[in-house]
Structure formats: structure tokens, C-alpha cells
Image (cartoon, rainbow, N blue to C red; front, top):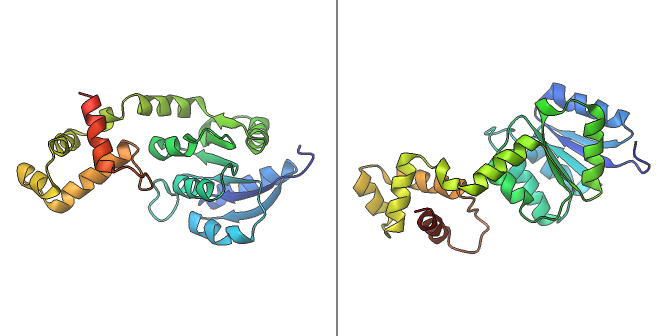
Length: 218
């Protein structure tokens, strides 16, 4: 398909799917520069690769949660506008929002079960490499819902902890109020930060931003 064959890396923990993607991509006239079982393998090999695009799963070892998106975000921070295609069974809205936040294009997010035409997959690769954005409608819907009111995703106890944070209570004071351990409070606060899209690399104090989000929602 491509007049100038693109060099593509595949990061997918499923052996069958990884090998299937290798075959599909090569049959389309692209070059598979490498196929990797997890983000660590890919990251270690990256300095030696000449790439035009990476196709990345979301849930991979070791925790099978959002490793792929984290690797993609780190890659885009190191190499702005580097073309990335997320190909997953799941929509992970929190880190997906960060991946698309810069609005620079060269990125896509497709759901494996909804890719029903091989040509559409090839076209998605070409569009991303050319600077476009490709999004499955279900991904768009999920991201919009998450962006409209992330506070709705908080559990009742997380809302309690958020309210206590808004009052200015320390972690120790929150633990005493709700008769829970300090470690539990820290886990709740970490989850709150994630659900509100407040990531480690933000310059502003995440606790303040979380409280502001809480106050805006009440």
C-alpha cells in the first residue's frame, strides 16, 4: 500500500495476536522493525530502532492495567509527534486523555474487536503516520463522558476523602476521621488523582487541583 514502506514496531503480549499483526502489516507492504511482548522490551530496544510508527496494546505485563498507554505517553514526551496507534480491547480513559491532550495528531486508538475491515486498519496506519488522528467512536464516547464529570467516577469513600481534603485535613487527620489506616488514605488519594487526570509530571500541586475540581463540582 505504502509507496515508501513505513517501519513499524508491534508491542503486544499475546503471541498469536502479535504474530498475526506481523503478518498483516508485512502483507500490506510495511516493514516490521520489531515485535515485542511488553513495554520494557520495546523501551530497551527503542534506541536501536528506526521507526515510523508503533502499534501498542494497553494491558501488558507486569500489572495488565495501563502499561501500554504509559509507555506511549513517555515515548511522546521524549519524541513529540511520534506516531502511535493504540490497539486494545479496552478503553482506558485516564491515560488516553493525556495521550491526546497535546492535540498534535500522529495518534490513534482503535478497539481490537471493532476492527472489522483490514483495509480500514491499513488506512488508520497511513493516516496516523501522515499526522492525523484515528479514534474508535466508542473511545470518543468514553473520553467525552470522563471529561464531562470525572467526579462521577469517585466512590462514596473517595468522595468522603476528597471532602476532607477540601477542608484542609492532613492524611493522618483523614485516617482518624474515617477510622482507616494511613496507607488506605494514601491509596484513596492516589486513585482520586488518577481519576481526575492529575498526573505526576504536572507542575501544579495535585492536592490543590483535586480540591479545586471538588469545589467546582459542588
